[in-house]
Image (cartoon, rainbow, N blue to C red; front, side, top):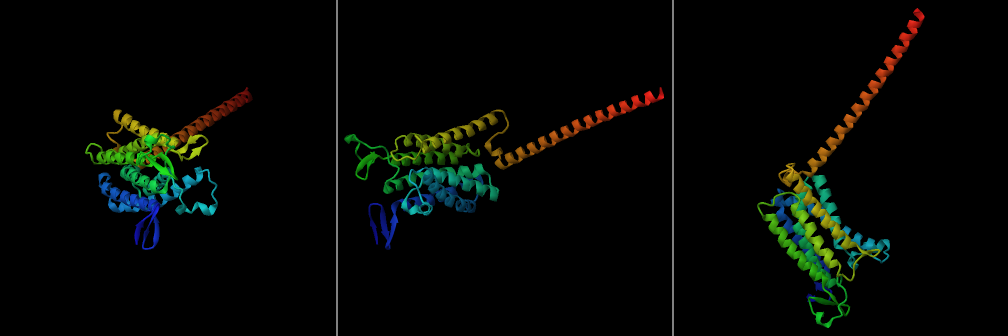
Length: 313
């Protein structure tokens, strides 16, 4: 009924791959942790479950599309949907999930930074567990190992009989450590600012992935550039940028903390400023037009006076 094989196990006659099973466990635990963390940003469990209905489907779609777009394999339209044949990318899942979070926040009027902070520890936990699934799928491995002294598990692993660096385990360990850090920060009384945990996720995951991606032997490329390594660097820059902006605004007294930095309020204020500026410009144009018309009328009056004077003479 239940037996272990190379890449799948049998459950009541069903062939269930370890990769898919482990990914499902990662998703379930991620949602569970997010529900537990919801209270730290003023959300409810129902909010997280509803958000998951947006995030998880889009994460799966994003993971597949990312792989299809950057893979060197030419996919037919029908093959794009055959996710059970393999071909998913974590960064595509992150992008799809982020779109899901934005849609949830827009439709249900939630603060993006709140949901982002809650999602960050769950996301990196899901990534840590998912990388274990990569071992069973035989993907996300490192460069080939030729030194016999390094041919031992889990430093290296055999893929199709060839030893490679176990980069899937390197990233898994890094992500578990990142999860522990983010969970500690989430619960610290003095880390209540919106967006800080999310920004630290970008930095932590981006830094680890940028280094580990350099050791990968099956990366996706744009020309000679590793796509995921480039995205990792961009994540680090984005995380540092948000923290820097917060620091500068706090230093200047614009905000006391990110709790005061409401994304929807910020957008509203920017729209209000743009509207007021537009009205001011319109008023200035009307004033200039009125002055021009007045000057023109004065010139016409002077010409009429000159004509009347000449008639009198």
